[in-house]
Length: 400
Image 1 (cartoon, rainbow, N blue to C red):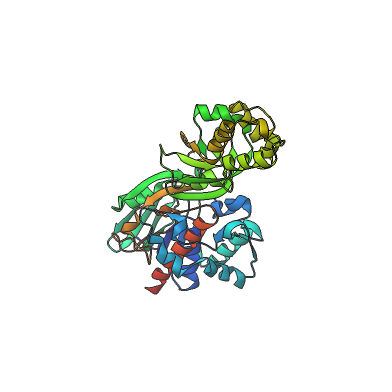
Image 2: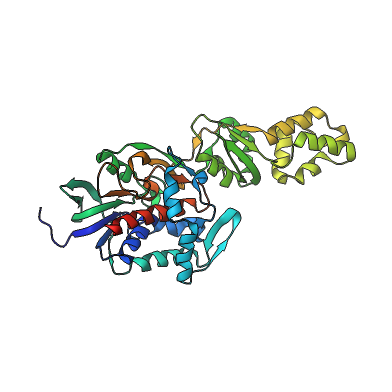
């Protein structure tokens, strides 16, 4: 091989959160030469979009319970070695402030630009970057890796695969990282869209398409997981935080149990109110609990007249209660990769060292971030996984 200026100690594939953080960690703690290759024309595109541009950079409650993987224990080591407050400490050292919001979510006060500047500043001039690079192949020849691209050949002692997955395809998301892993003999758990809305059946669309844009606070249950947050009716189905969270654990054909009144058993509540305040109108009672548009649509669907509670039949209370407390929603499918926040699945973690992210099959090959079969819930968990997995990877590389 003819090798000269294109030889590096480490080549990082992918200029997303995990790749950039890993590169910055390596050069801040060693003299190793690092090159980052990316198919886009700028780094950290997904970070820029995170939290609607406000950048929900971590969650203080990041533990294994908030991640989906075929091996639920895999993420424990990395999260223990580098948790949410470790990343927060780095930000505070640089004078970057943040605000804790809903359910432990931390947002940068300076929005996504503050996090992007922080990550790029850590790389400084020590990290080389090449953008708009189409990678053709990655092979190991002897003790070195050879990366063939349309922009030339690069050689490295170690390769970090931080290519993400198929979500956010409009800004460069692909399954190339998974295919690369397969070429090195790794198994890949099937990639599926996750943290995404659902398409509804024709029957459900007929019932609720007129409510598009209407949010409702709900709890949802799917495959043993429960989430309380908002649900948003859309022209194609349902979305919003609660359904999107459930999509991480949903499998095609499953039903999702939706409770529109998680703190009230409606049948019992209406029966009691009927006894205590019989002259109350049914619609006024329901509008105190639910959006008005939703209430009127339900009364149309179930053909329930707007009477005083005293004149309402118990069977109508039961009908409303069964639906509102226990709607069995069966999606046709998810909305797909184009609108998915993340991909579920990825490189099988049973073939990767949990303490270092190094391949168990190929020495010097590492996988970090979303390319692995570790997918977090909404609320900063996936960015925390990017930091944690990248940190332990860099730590191992620096130690050699």
